Image (cartoon, rainbow, N blue to C red):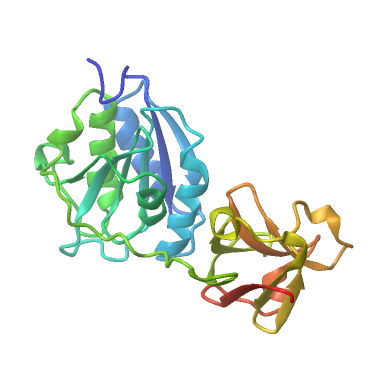
Length: 269
């Protein structure tokens, strides 16, 4: 039976805050493979900090577009599990995203306004017994397996245009000045901001100044190697966002910078 975007040999990615110490991720994989053994499961990451939805939003955005059309992305970072919060199944980037309705897909919505959004409510597609605390195993995993096996997206539940969009704030632009914030810190201590190349178009990168906390940086670079070891810099990274980093160092730790910190971009006169 053909699936929403093609054959049954679908890829399902899993991104969670479950970690790998416990058996939670394995339980989800077991449910999927029991129902759809032909599926290829790819781990996005399971190292999202517990219940940090914004971190998951950035993580899924950074890798989803590199997967082939028809991929199903399951993202479970769900502080509201067991409450009345909805679970969404979303068609965007020629793929399907399943996530709790908590703003987790904000950057996906911004990059590619979704064609269709559905509330996952069809209990026929769930496991027979649904735990109030493990929807990843009992709802997300079996519904993803059903979709991979040919169930139509519209069969998961009613279509909706009411869902959380604005988790990730947008920068404010005032002429040649941009006010944004740090939205993500990676394992190297690099700090991703919500400022993108699109916001910086038209600016002379050699004359740009970037201020965050007590740190003021001159210029925007293309590679870490353009400064000396241990020196801070601002650069545009592969995700398209402006990043604050230290060559071979930890910018967050070295300068006591945190997610949510204000970032100001301007021009030296």
